[in-house]
Amino acid sequence: MSAALLPTKSINAPADLAVLGAPPLFADKLHVGRPNVLGRERFRRRVEEMFDSGWLSNNGPLVREFERRVADYVGVRNCVAVCNATIGLELLIRAAGLRGEVIVPSFTFIATAHALTWHGVTPVFADIDPATHCLDPESVERLVTPDTSGVIGTHLWGRPCPVEALDDIARRHDLVLMYDAAHAFGCTRGGRMVGGFGLAEVFSFHATKFLNSFEGGAITTDDDELAARLRLMKNFGFAGYDKVVYLGTNGKMTEVCAAMGLTNLELIDELVAINRANHARYKAGLGGVAGLRLMEYDARERSNYQYVVVEVDEARAGLTRDELIEILHRENVLARRYFWPGCHRMEAYRGDPRYAGLSLPATELVSSRVLVLPTGAAVGEAEIGLICDALRVAVGGAGEVARALRGGAEG
Ligand code: T4K
Image (cartoon, rainbow, N blue to C red; front, side, top):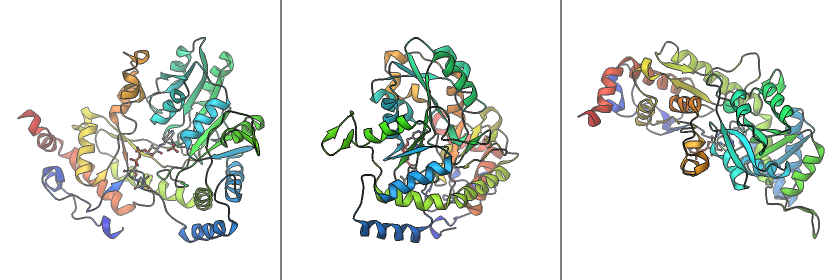
């Protein structure tokens, strides 16, 4: 445990909680998404080589090596590295010719929807399966219209979408199927690596992802022609000096980002092991706490375990999800409500008449129940034990804790 995270107390009874006036558990804040920064020496060596090479961006040797290694790891023919996953999605939307309407989950990071809207394509929000938090194929099927050109599924929390059912819908309706795989690097479905499903998939290597390249992303596909188009489009459409063959943008990954990505790719087993151990600790620590359900990862598949997601059943816990978030924040544990309230209820969309009155019951229920807890190399057994203590004691003393939290409103 780092000195900044040394606990200031133990939590054995409600009176030990900060919401009841005790000092916070941690002097410093624990974030969801604190970057993993292992392998600093390897990274520094690569950066020195980069300086020596005189090549900082524009498809340099480190980016090319990163692309090769990601493609090999995922088992696809092509990987196109990009500056971030949002631009990756935008490039893919253009390159695949999506237009009109595209069906997406509302329960996803806003970038999935924004990437479409930014390019004048209408995101049509489908509901999710409350058990998996991924797209519900029946909801998708109901939303197909003559204007639908595609479907983008999100492998939420690194748990893959029902790719077989979505594939079937896409084939029957002649739709382009692609995936936002921002959370799912290193995960499998049916033993097959995510990255090879649909026409193409987009990974994120943002600083907050378990495997980061500072900022970064990658589009993976077995379609050589699509990959060639993406390469041109991410470099303004240049096909040679003075020769622009496509409308393009600047979506290039820099060499320093590729250096970080390569370093972390070499450490991927260690990074996954850290997350897996943390997940098991949360499982042990939260077992038997009424109304809290930790989302599991399928033990038969490979997973990156990068999100620790808890669903709160308010009736059983005696506290709402938002009250538990408040309790944790007061302890300096910055748990998050990803992805509340769902894209369709975000200001950017809910004011648009196309989404007025849209009701997605599973999305709305799940987004009101989910809380995401810190994991990664920044936390370990001690911190997780204390976070679980705080949750267990809060739920155990829910009556007293709720009175303290609601006192102002009720009085
Ligand atoms: N699709 C999906 C399904 C996604 O989840 C995402 C990104 C994307 C697409 C788009 O990928 P990129 O274009 O970003 O490659 C964060 C990330 O910014 C975002 O990348 C991620 N998903 C999303 C789930 O989480 P915020 O708004 O929660 O970020 P922020 O700034 O609050 O960071 C989280 C916490 O991490 C903070 O409390 C502070 C801490 N932090 C963050 C950074 C960057 C650090 O301690 N150090 C750092 O360097 O979105």
